[in-house]
Structure formats: structure tokens, C-alpha cells
Amino acid sequence: MGAIRRLGSEITAWRRSTTITVAVAGLSRSGKTAFITSVVANLQAAARNSRAAEWLKGLDAVATGRLRSADRPQNYRPRHGRMLPYGDMLSALTADAPSWPSRTADVYETALDIHFWPGAAPVAGSSADKAAARLRLVIVDYPGEWLVDVPMMGQPYADWSAAALNRLRSAPWSEVSDGFRTLLAETDWTGPDSNDAAERAAREWQRVLVAARERGLKWLQPGHFVRARGQDEEGAVPRLDEERLWFCPLPDAAISAAKGGSLARAMSDRYARYQKETGKFFGDTLKDATHHVLLVDVLEALAEGERAFNESAEVLAEVYRVFAAETSTFKRLLGLAGLKRVMLVATKADTVPPNQRAAMQSLLTDMCGGRFAGAAGAARPEADYLAAVRATQDVDAVVDGAEPVRVVEGLCSETGKRRRVTMIDVPDRMPSADYFRRRQGIRPPRFVPPAVDGRGDYGVPNVRLGHVLHKLLGEVLR
Ligand SMILES: Nc1nc2c(ncn2[C@@H]2O[C@H](COP(=O)(O)OP(=O)(O)OP(=O)(O)O)[C@@H](O)[C@H]2O)c(=O)[nH]1
Ligand SMILES: [Mg+2]
Image 1 (cartoon, rainbow, N blue to C red):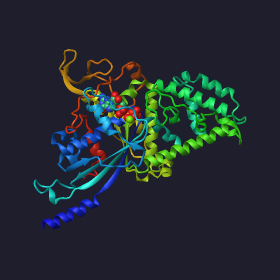
Image 2 (image 1 turned 180 degrees about the vertical axis):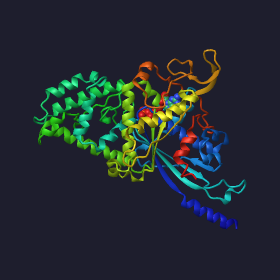
Image 3 (image 1 turned 135 degrees about the vertical axis):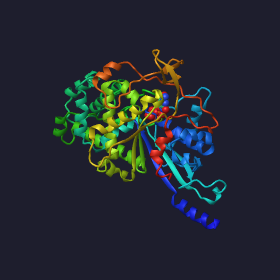
Image 4 (image 1 turned 180 degrees about the horizontal axis):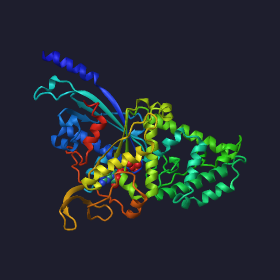
């Protein structure tokens, strides 16, 4: 009887052996690498140690004791890009003086084999009778700067140019684009193609983008003008040596009047090539993605001021639309048909007191969903919030002699001193201009990561990671 039961459960488990690929995306510094490191570390630890399972509350497979093991497969060969240096990241976090993972300069991949018992955990002592199902979880991480290229993929050169030039009309874009606008006006774009002129224009456009980046602006297209493959130092500027990158947005009149052999036509061809190559990159990287997590640092976005915040919302809404809409050309072109779920997650929630965290989630839904509600085939975004690596503790503090309130406290990386955050006014929907005027100059503090046990058995402190993982993976871990 035992043998039959075991065979039956083995068949069920075998049929339940699946691979899912989660692409983790988000604007740069949104917390992607910290998230991935924490997911891997916490799942591994939860399978080994019930105390660590505390860090994944909300993930049903863990709460019901159905997680048997979670291990990084030996000799795993990444299909996309390079192997994520997970060991280095965890060592950075678990060092005596813990530090955050370094910037992502390429496409990285990591995998975790999760064995779990489907349905119900085996009764004590009978686990040998019950075969476990396997979920291979593949996670892909890529630099945030490239995400902003996604909306360009289906956009004709003239439309992209018009949108980019339109932005230059008002501050802060107008303040960083004098040189470029002069060059636009002085060059004969319909005249004969010239590599010198094209290179100069591309470099001038790059200067605009780099200056815009310093002001927190987000429409930094093409992404490869601000982040080259393999470039990992903060603020570095790609060299633009290659002729294929010598293009920039041009006025509509120049594009429509351009004949073969003209400067404008050459730029238009390079734009098309960029679209094709970038499309191929996304296709190769994301074609297996069944799940997409879009991470957003809403607190930093709010601190960057009204215009930059609105740009963050626009870029996110566009990217989300492309990923989520059934009818999106991008999705059809790249065969993202297997994409089952797109989830938005507000990160670094440990930076604000607990009672302000839920607002991060509704703000994010509004940033992303508000402007295209009802767009063809796109469901309302599913959003949540978390802190992948919790760098603060909740403490009760008396503020202004009133009743104690729950605030957060951590070691501030800028000052090296402990710092309390009693209030960061997080709006629960797109805020007004007045909100930004009131908060000018207020930035969320950066905290030093917490001390994490180096043996990897205790998991990584976090906020709500288990809940987010349950929303993302709950169905496949049933
Ligand atoms: N307090 C807190 N800070 C975090 C958390 N996650 C990330 N950070 C901070 O955000 C920074 C960026 O995090 P990363 O995980 O490197 O972000 P990323 O999205 O991978 O960045 P790029 O690779 O540069 O695109 C870190 O260096 C930390 O300062 C978190 O859960 N809590
Ligand atoms: Mg990263």
C-alpha cells in the first residue's frame, strides 16, 4: 500500500516539475539586486531552519511546512548573460561591516531548485512516502537604464523624436539642452550624410541625457547612451565610439523630407538598427520570462521633485503597458506570449514607519495604472511593497510629547549615526504640485544594511518578502 501511495505521489510530483523564469526589472537603483539576493538567501535558509522561515511569513509553502529544500543547482549554466555573483553579494551583506551589493553592469542570472510537497505536508515521520515536486526558479537581473528602451521598441523614429524634443521645451530639460538645440537648428539634416556631423550630434544628445540624469530625470533614451554593457561605476559615461550609435532625435520636418544618402536618413537607419538590436537583446533575455517583477523606489522618486517623479510614473506606465497589454507589438514581436504575470513592487519600505507603507503600494498602482486604465487587454496593475533587506528596526518613540508612535531607526550611511524616521509623508496617489513644494529638499535616508548571519541559516531580515513571493509564486508552489 505504501509503495502504491509512493508511486502515485511520485507521478503527481513528476508532473509538477516546472521551470519558471522571473525577470526582475526596475529603474536603476530600485533595489533589484538586493531583492534577488534576499529571495535566494531566504528561500535557502527557510528550507534549512524553521527560525529562518519566520522571514518568509506569508509564503504558504513555507508556513505550511511544505518546503523541503531550496538549493542553487551545481554546474548551472545561465541561458542569458552571466551567472549572478551571488556568493559575493551575500558576503558583502554578511561581512563584519556589511555593505550593499554593487551595481549591475550586465545581464545576470541565478537559479534555485525548490523541492516542495504539493497539497499538504507529509505527516510526521512519513516524508519518505511522499515525493516532492520540483520548481526550478530562474531569476534574471539586468541594468535599470536599459528598461527605458522598452517603449522605443514599437515606436517609429519620428514619434520617438517628437516626444524627446517636446520634453526639451520645458524645465528642467530646457536647462540642460541649449547646446543641443543650437546644433539642431544649425545643421542641415536633409543634406548629405556625414559621420562627423552625426557623431557630434549623438555626443551632444548624450550630454543632454547625462545632465538630465543628474537631475533625476528618467526619459534617458537610448539607454545605451547612459549605460554601456559592462560599465559599473556610478556616473560613468559610455564612449559612443561606434558609428551605429550616432543618432539623436530630429525635427519631424527633417525626417519627413529626408532622402536616401542624407544625414537624417542615416540617423533614421541607425535608430532602426538600434531598435532591432535592442529588441533582440530583450527577446533573448526575456523570451523565457514567465513572470516579471517591476521594482520601484517610490520614495526616491518622490524626493526627486515633481517633474522627475512624473517621468518615473510615465516610464513605468509605458513599460508596464508594453509588458502587460495582450495586444502589445513588443509582446508579439518578441514572443513574450508565455508571460503570465507582471507585478509591481515598491521597494525599501523599511525606510518609512509601518503605518505609511501601504500608501507606497497604492501610490505605485496609481503611478502605473492611472494613466491608461482600460487600455486594450491590460489588467489593472497588481502592486505590493517590501523591503528586501531590512536595514531598520521598528521602535516606539514619543514625538512632541504625544502617545508613543511606531517609527523606524537604523544606521544612516551618510552620517554614520543612528537615525530615526518618524514621518515621511507618502501620498497614496499621484500627488499635487503643492505636495512637491512642501517637501522640497526632503530625502529618504540611506541606511547601512543590517548585520546578517554569515552561515546563511538565518535568512535575511526583510519586510513582507514572503507575501510578495506568495503572490508571485503561490500558484506554482501549491
Ligand atoms: N533601506 C533599504 N535600502 C535598500 C534596500 N534594497 C536596496 N536598498 C538601497 O538601494 C541601493 C540600490 O540597490 P540595488 O539592489 O543595487 O539596486 P539595483 O536596482 O540592482 O541597481 P542597478 O543594478 O544599479 O540598476 C542599495 O545600494 C541600497 O542603498 C532595502 O530593502 N532597504
Ligand atoms: Mg543591480
